[in-house]
Image 1 (cartoon, rainbow, N blue to C red):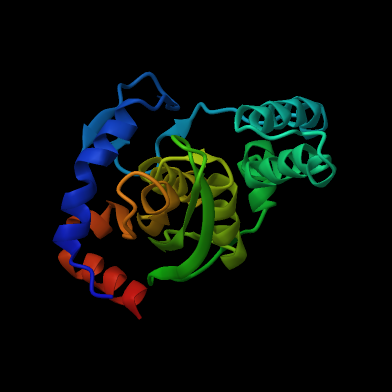
Image 2 (cartoon, rainbow, N blue to C red):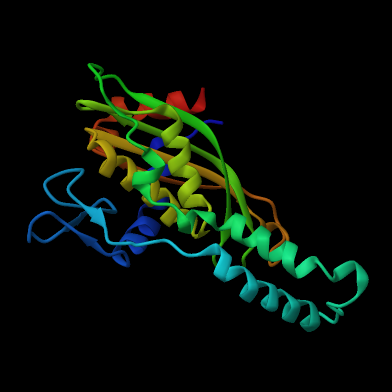
Length: 243
């Protein structure tokens, strides 16, 4: 699929700006964060960290979810004690915990120290990473692919860790714009690259199965450093993601 750099970046800039304005970040100093091109940053890329905290006890959450699903079955006119539905609340609760298990992950555990010194200044791209998430507005699936590229300074990530970063943030209730941003931020925080680019292409079941009932693909992107400022770097990344 051919992706125009101007179309991808331009069409998503407003959405990125809105999502980022609602986020909370801290820096290593008291300098105020600034906004440029839809990205919050201080003194270039890599000087911000998310204040988000995660973690929950899935064992404690399961009984409450089971009760909630029993209520859902009653609300749609079913009998949760009907033979074929007796175990449905438990199964549905376990499925929801699986779909949202990213809340229990911490980035340090996901990376697990797989950051390596490398004498490599060429672009690193991991493309077409399968992504499954849930729309935070309707709790319906988002299915798509993610491509991540970065220009290392002194360190590189273990390749599987990029896929694990995608998995961690996608296994939450998500908006695609925020998911794109969170993946980029995680790479920045992990290795402070010279630049980073993330493209997410996904189909939203909340659009396909209800509402307008049309199948379409949504593309969001974040480009920072040379990925945004240098046309050749951006085109190289887009070319590599197209294959």
